[in-house]
Image (cartoon, rainbow, N blue to C red; front, side, top):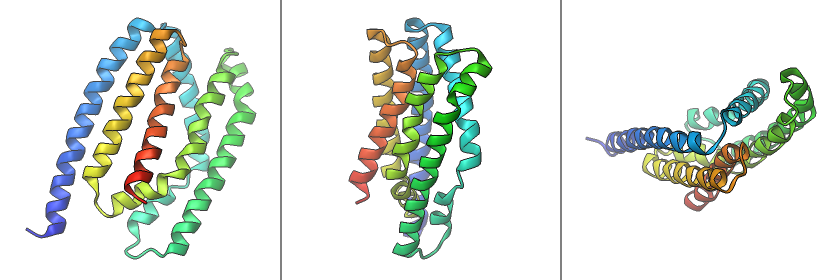
Length: 193
C-alpha cells in the first residue's frame, strides 16, 4: 500500500470517528441547552442562521475548493485567494449588518438585530484561517483536521453550556459558534504555519 493510500485510509478513519463524536456531543449539548434555555432562544438562532446563510449563499464563491483542486498552486495564487476571501467576507459582513433590521422587521423580532450582529463576527474571523485549513485538506492532514474540529466542537460546546448556565440566554448558542471559530483559528494557525 502506498504512503498516500495509507494516509487517506487513516485520515478517513479519523474524520469518521470525529464526525461521529461531534454528532454525539451535539445531541448531548442540545439536551443540556434545552434544559437551560427557552425554546424561543433556539428559534431566534435558527432565524439568524437562516438569514446569514441566505446572504452568504450569494457572497461565498468557494475559492477554498480551488486550492484543493490545483495540483501545484503558487504563493501568488494563495495570496490572491487569501485576500479575495477577506474582501468577500467584509462585503458579506456589511450586507448582513446593513440588512439585519430588515430581517428583524420581516420576522417581527427586534432582538434579531443584535443577535445577527454578534453572529456575523464569525464571517470576519474565518478568512484568517480558511486558506490554511484548505492547505491541510490538500496535503491530506486529516488527523490534524480531526484534532482541530473535535477540539473546536468540545470547547464551543462547553462555552455554550457555561453561557447558558450563567444566564446569557440566546447568546449562549451564538457563543458556541464564535468560540468554535476562534479555537479553529488558533489551532489551524498553530498546525499550519
